[in-house]
Image (cartoon, rainbow, N blue to C red; front, side, top):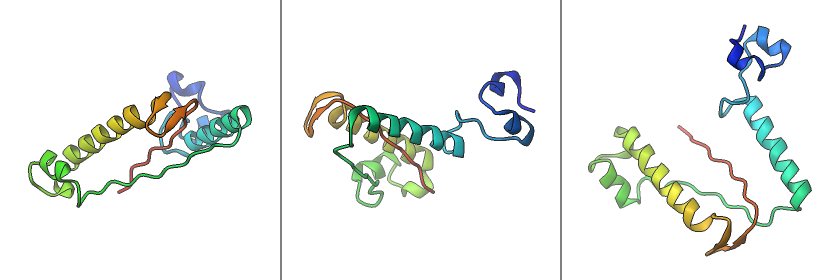
Length: 117
């Protein structure tokens, strides 16, 4: 059974079956909650107008190789992840900040960030 700090986040059935709470990123309950939030935004604000998919260019980013001490990103996963997180944070603050941005006036924002192995 889940401890008291998780008990409020689990249904009765999950507390006995070892279900994953919705606060754990990547779990089924987490993505269900994210889906519900996204649908609520669509109902409240209308159809989303802009979609974007980004993929890291591990082989083409010279700054990534530098961040990994000249080694392959695969041999330095911590450094590579930290550098990718830095680039993502910079992108968000430059292009996805609410209000005026280089891509237009952003009034509402929802994004999904996945890590793949």
